[in-house]
Every structure is written in structure tokens, then in C-alpha cells.
Length: 212
Image (cartoon, rainbow, N blue to C red; front, side, top):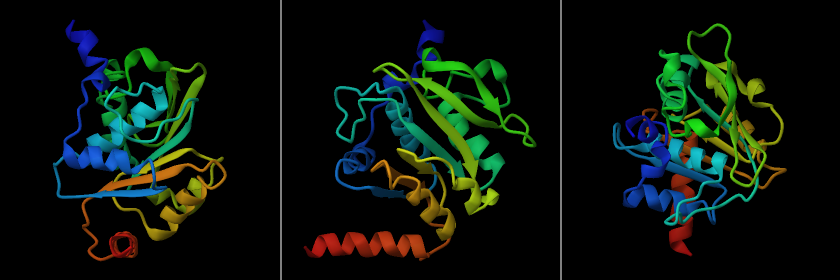
């Protein structure tokens, strides 16, 4: 019973108010930002939503956007190590213990085959295939900002999740990857860079909505 629970953590996810508002905003916004202090559940929130879309297992309480088909997604952070210890760990389980694959927010029963290993970074994963509820498989790739904008020039994507604030050129390339699909980008971070270009644009957009 413990193993069943540990390999199906997504079923137990219940967002608090601000997390739920972030999920709900996906219905009407192509770009979203969850900006808050450290250790308040930002990364967990982003990982949970990513896992929900990859699997198509939308809970009854889900207020956000839904896909009725498999999706193509990307998760990224500052470096390969940070991506491994952040998004990868939350989605797949403890990276330093291979027996823990499937103990993250993507249920073990939904992971198809073995994840692809990223070369040059111990215990890092470059991609994983995820069974979607509708039939067929979703795909998830892991990237890092230090690979540069060019590394983000993959095929069209439905969902991009940058955890930690990306450089503006990397962010705009990520956004471009969702143009053809009508997909979305959701960012989760603590504003360590102050009033950066990305922070300023989101704040200005929010103020414009409030004025309408």
C-alpha cells in the first residue's frame, strides 16, 4: 500500500488557494507566472500541473486548461544540475537513486520504458515518455538555460515549464515553441533578479488587466 501511494503522488495533490488560481489562469492566459518566496510550493505546483497534462488524468477539482490528447512538453531550469534537482526530481523521483524513478508526480504506471539519460551530468535525464489517458504517449524533455537559446529550438511544444527565471532570450524562444500549437508557458520562480525584463512585463500586463 505504501509503494502504491508513493508511486501515485499525483492523486493526492490538492492545491492551496494561490496554486489553484495559477492553474485556473491557464484557461484564459497563454503565459503565466507564479512568483513567490522560497519554499512555498512553487516548483511542486508547476510539477503537478505538468504531470496532470502529460498523463491527461485531470482530477474532478481541476479548474484549468485541459488537453484531450497526448502533449509535447519541456521543463527547464538554470543549469543541468538545477534542472535535475528541481523539475526532474519533482516529476520523476530522487535522481541519485535509480530505484526511485516513478516516485515523483508522474505516476510510475504512466512512465513508458526507460527515461533518456543526459550526457555529462550525473543522474540527469534528458527526456521521458508518458502514457496519456486518451491513448498514445506524451513526451517531456528536460533542458537548462545554460545550453543557450539554440537548445530550445525543438519541435513545436504544447507546454513549457521554466522553473527559476530564464534569460529573456531563452524565455522568448520557449514561447515561440508554442506558437504553432496554441500552447502555453508557465513560469515558477522567486524574483532573485529584481525588476527584470520578464518580471516587469508580467507586472505591467497584470496592471493593464486591472485597469480594464
